[in-house]
Image (cartoon, rainbow over all chains, first blue to last red; front, top):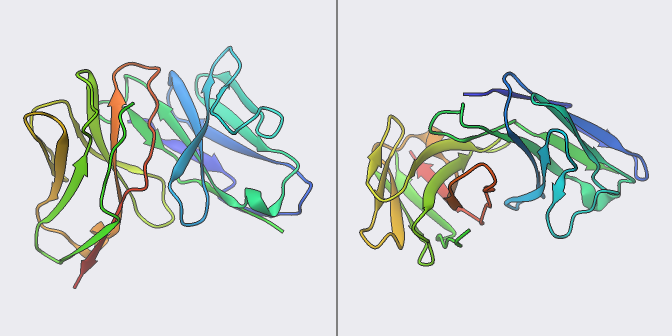
Length: 116
Length: 111
Protein backbone atom coordinates (compact mmCIF):
# COMPACT_ATOMS: atom_id res chain seq x y z
CA UNK A 1 0.00 0.00 0.00
CA UNK A 2 1.04 3.62 -0.48
CA UNK A 3 2.94 5.26 2.37
CA UNK A 4 2.35 8.91 3.22
CA UNK A 5 4.87 11.28 4.77
CA UNK A 6 3.56 14.50 6.22
CA UNK A 7 5.62 17.54 7.19
CA UNK A 8 5.81 19.14 9.65
CA UNK A 9 4.59 16.67 12.24
CA UNK A 10 3.77 19.52 14.60
CA UNK A 11 4.13 23.28 14.79
CA UNK A 12 3.27 26.18 17.02
CA UNK A 13 2.37 29.31 15.06
CA UNK A 14 1.47 32.90 15.79
CA UNK A 15 -2.01 34.07 14.97
CA UNK A 16 -2.26 35.90 11.67
CA UNK A 17 0.47 33.84 10.03
CA UNK A 18 0.16 30.98 7.53
CA UNK A 19 1.48 27.42 7.58
CA UNK A 20 1.95 25.12 4.62
CA UNK A 21 1.71 21.39 5.27
CA UNK A 22 3.29 18.98 2.83
CA UNK A 23 2.06 15.51 1.95
CA UNK A 24 4.28 13.14 0.00
CA UNK A 25 3.13 9.70 -1.19
CA UNK A 26 5.67 7.06 -2.19
CA UNK A 27 3.65 6.10 -5.28
CA UNK A 28 1.36 7.80 -7.75
CA UNK A 29 -2.20 8.04 -6.50
CA UNK A 30 -5.36 9.26 -8.13
CA UNK A 31 -6.97 11.11 -5.26
CA UNK A 32 -5.62 12.96 -2.27
CA UNK A 33 -7.67 14.34 0.58
CA UNK A 34 -7.15 16.74 3.44
CA UNK A 35 -8.91 16.32 6.77
CA UNK A 36 -9.07 18.38 9.94
CA UNK A 37 -9.45 16.83 13.38
CA UNK A 38 -10.25 19.31 16.10
CA UNK A 39 -9.40 18.39 19.69
CA UNK A 40 -11.50 15.47 20.88
CA UNK A 41 -13.44 15.32 17.62
CA UNK A 42 -13.69 13.07 14.60
CA UNK A 43 -12.14 13.76 11.22
CA UNK A 44 -13.79 16.34 8.96
CA UNK A 45 -13.01 16.38 5.26
CA UNK A 46 -11.69 19.75 4.10
CA UNK A 47 -11.19 19.09 0.40
CA UNK A 48 -10.32 16.64 -2.32
CA UNK A 49 -7.17 17.44 -4.28
CA UNK A 50 -6.96 16.29 -7.89
CA UNK A 51 -3.92 16.72 -10.07
CA UNK A 52 -4.41 19.27 -12.83
CA UNK A 53 -7.57 20.83 -11.45
CA UNK A 54 -8.80 22.98 -8.59
CA UNK A 55 -9.42 21.28 -5.29
CA UNK A 56 -13.02 20.49 -4.40
CA UNK A 57 -13.93 21.95 -1.01
CA UNK A 58 -16.51 20.66 1.43
CA UNK A 59 -19.18 22.87 2.90
CA UNK A 60 -17.71 25.26 5.43
CA UNK A 61 -14.22 25.32 3.93
CA UNK A 62 -13.02 27.90 1.40
CA UNK A 63 -10.03 28.21 -0.84
CA UNK A 64 -8.93 31.55 0.58
CA UNK A 65 -8.52 30.01 4.02
CA UNK A 66 -7.22 26.60 2.95
CA UNK A 67 -5.47 26.85 -0.41
CA UNK A 68 -4.41 23.47 -1.74
CA UNK A 69 -1.91 22.51 -4.41
CA UNK A 70 -1.56 19.19 -6.23
CA UNK A 71 1.30 19.63 -8.69
CA UNK A 72 1.73 15.93 -9.45
CA UNK A 73 0.41 12.48 -8.58
CA UNK A 74 2.58 12.02 -5.49
CA UNK A 75 2.47 15.39 -3.72
CA UNK A 76 0.03 17.90 -2.26
CA UNK A 77 0.16 20.87 0.07
CA UNK A 78 -2.43 22.44 2.34
CA UNK A 79 -1.95 25.99 3.57
CA UNK A 80 -3.77 27.22 6.65
CA UNK A 81 -3.96 30.97 6.11
CA UNK A 82 -4.32 33.88 8.51
CA UNK A 83 -4.45 31.50 11.43
CA UNK A 84 -6.42 31.98 14.62
CA UNK A 85 -6.50 29.82 17.76
CA UNK A 86 -9.63 28.11 16.36
CA UNK A 87 -7.43 26.58 13.65
CA UNK A 88 -5.57 24.57 16.28
CA UNK A 89 -6.18 21.01 15.10
CA UNK A 90 -4.56 17.96 13.63
CA UNK A 91 -4.47 18.14 9.84
CA UNK A 92 -4.31 14.80 8.03
CA UNK A 93 -3.52 13.90 4.47
CA UNK A 94 -5.07 10.83 2.85
CA UNK A 95 -4.68 9.11 -0.50
CA UNK A 96 -6.86 6.81 -2.58
CA UNK A 97 -6.01 4.67 -5.53
CA UNK A 98 -6.82 1.28 -6.95
CA UNK A 99 -3.18 0.35 -6.41
CA UNK A 100 -3.83 0.36 -2.68
CA UNK A 101 -5.15 -3.19 -2.50
CA UNK A 102 -8.21 -3.78 -0.36
CA UNK A 103 -7.51 -0.76 1.77
CA UNK A 104 -8.40 1.91 -0.77
CA UNK A 105 -7.36 4.72 1.54
CA UNK A 106 -4.18 5.37 3.42
CA UNK A 107 -3.48 8.17 5.87
CA UNK A 108 -0.51 10.18 7.01
CA UNK A 109 0.16 10.51 10.71
CA UNK A 110 -0.96 14.12 10.72
CA UNK A 111 0.31 17.61 11.51
CA UNK A 112 -0.52 18.86 14.98
CA UNK A 113 -0.99 22.62 14.74
CA UNK A 114 -1.23 24.92 17.72
CA UNK A 115 -2.00 28.60 17.10
CA UNK A 116 -1.12 31.02 19.87
CA UNK B 1 -23.09 8.05 1.43
CA UNK B 2 -25.27 6.42 4.07
CA UNK B 3 -24.97 7.50 7.68
CA UNK B 4 -23.77 5.15 10.41
CA UNK B 5 -24.65 4.97 14.09
CA UNK B 6 -22.29 3.56 16.70
CA UNK B 7 -22.35 3.47 20.50
CA UNK B 8 -20.12 6.09 22.07
CA UNK B 9 -17.90 3.71 23.96
CA UNK B 10 -17.39 0.20 25.20
CA UNK B 11 -14.80 -1.78 27.04
CA UNK B 12 -13.64 -5.35 27.16
CA UNK B 13 -11.12 -7.45 29.02
CA UNK B 14 -7.77 -8.23 27.50
CA UNK B 15 -7.81 -11.56 25.71
CA UNK B 16 -11.55 -11.55 25.21
CA UNK B 17 -13.39 -10.87 21.98
CA UNK B 18 -14.48 -7.30 21.34
CA UNK B 19 -17.71 -6.99 19.34
CA UNK B 20 -18.27 -3.50 17.97
CA UNK B 21 -21.73 -2.87 16.50
CA UNK B 22 -22.69 -0.44 13.75
CA UNK B 23 -26.06 0.48 12.28
CA UNK B 24 -26.32 1.63 8.68
CA UNK B 25 -30.00 1.24 7.91
CA UNK B 26 -29.95 3.51 4.84
CA UNK B 27 -27.11 1.69 3.08
CA UNK B 28 -27.63 1.25 -0.63
CA UNK B 29 -26.78 -1.73 -2.79
CA UNK B 30 -23.40 -0.54 -4.06
CA UNK B 31 -22.08 0.81 -0.77
CA UNK B 32 -19.37 -0.93 1.19
CA UNK B 33 -18.94 -1.04 4.95
CA UNK B 34 -15.43 0.01 6.00
CA UNK B 35 -13.86 -0.06 9.43
CA UNK B 36 -10.94 2.10 10.42
CA UNK B 37 -9.38 2.73 13.78
CA UNK B 38 -7.40 5.61 15.18
CA UNK B 39 -4.96 5.02 17.96
CA UNK B 40 -4.14 8.14 19.92
CA UNK B 41 -2.02 10.65 17.99
CA UNK B 42 -1.89 8.53 14.84
CA UNK B 43 -3.64 8.63 11.47
CA UNK B 44 -6.56 6.27 10.87
CA UNK B 45 -5.64 2.68 10.09
CA UNK B 46 -7.62 0.42 7.78
CA UNK B 47 -9.03 -2.70 9.44
CA UNK B 48 -11.44 -4.42 7.07
CA UNK B 49 -14.24 -3.82 4.63
CA UNK B 50 -17.10 -5.77 3.08
CA UNK B 51 -20.09 -5.52 0.79
CA UNK B 52 -22.47 -8.26 1.88
CA UNK B 53 -20.48 -11.34 2.75
CA UNK B 54 -18.73 -11.79 6.05
CA UNK B 55 -15.03 -11.05 5.86
CA UNK B 56 -12.03 -12.05 7.92
CA UNK B 57 -8.43 -10.95 7.84
CA UNK B 58 -5.48 -11.08 10.20
CA UNK B 59 -6.84 -8.20 12.27
CA UNK B 60 -10.56 -8.80 12.57
CA UNK B 61 -13.79 -10.27 11.29
CA UNK B 62 -16.67 -8.33 9.83
CA UNK B 63 -20.17 -9.72 10.13
CA UNK B 64 -22.80 -8.03 7.95
CA UNK B 65 -26.46 -8.85 8.49
CA UNK B 66 -28.40 -10.30 5.60
CA UNK B 67 -30.40 -7.09 5.10
CA UNK B 68 -27.08 -5.16 5.32
CA UNK B 69 -28.58 -2.67 7.75
CA UNK B 70 -26.06 -3.40 10.45
CA UNK B 71 -22.68 -4.97 10.97
CA UNK B 72 -20.34 -6.06 13.75
CA UNK B 73 -16.59 -5.79 13.87
CA UNK B 74 -15.03 -8.56 15.90
CA UNK B 75 -11.54 -8.38 17.38
CA UNK B 76 -11.15 -12.01 18.43
CA UNK B 77 -8.54 -11.57 21.18
CA UNK B 78 -8.35 -7.94 22.23
CA UNK B 79 -5.05 -6.60 23.53
CA UNK B 80 -4.21 -3.35 25.28
CA UNK B 81 -2.87 -2.06 21.95
CA UNK B 82 -6.37 -2.35 20.49
CA UNK B 83 -7.52 0.56 22.66
CA UNK B 84 -8.57 3.13 20.04
CA UNK B 85 -11.47 4.91 18.38
CA UNK B 86 -13.12 2.64 15.81
CA UNK B 87 -14.96 4.17 12.88
CA UNK B 88 -17.62 2.37 10.88
CA UNK B 89 -17.98 4.07 7.48
CA UNK B 90 -20.27 3.41 4.56
CA UNK B 91 -18.75 4.29 1.23
CA UNK B 92 -19.86 3.92 -2.35
CA UNK B 93 -17.62 2.36 -4.91
CA UNK B 94 -15.49 4.35 -7.34
CA UNK B 95 -12.72 6.88 -7.23
CA UNK B 96 -14.90 9.87 -6.45
CA UNK B 97 -16.40 8.48 -3.29
CA UNK B 98 -15.10 10.10 -0.13
CA UNK B 99 -14.56 8.63 3.31
CA UNK B 100 -16.86 10.46 5.72
CA UNK B 101 -16.09 9.83 9.37
CA UNK B 102 -18.73 9.76 12.09
CA UNK B 103 -17.96 10.01 15.78
CA UNK B 104 -16.81 6.42 16.12
CA UNK B 105 -16.76 4.20 19.15
CA UNK B 106 -14.03 4.37 21.78
CA UNK B 107 -12.90 0.88 22.72
CA UNK B 108 -11.03 0.56 25.99
CA UNK B 109 -9.31 -2.75 26.61
CA UNK B 110 -8.67 -3.33 30.29
CA UNK B 111 -5.97 -5.60 31.72
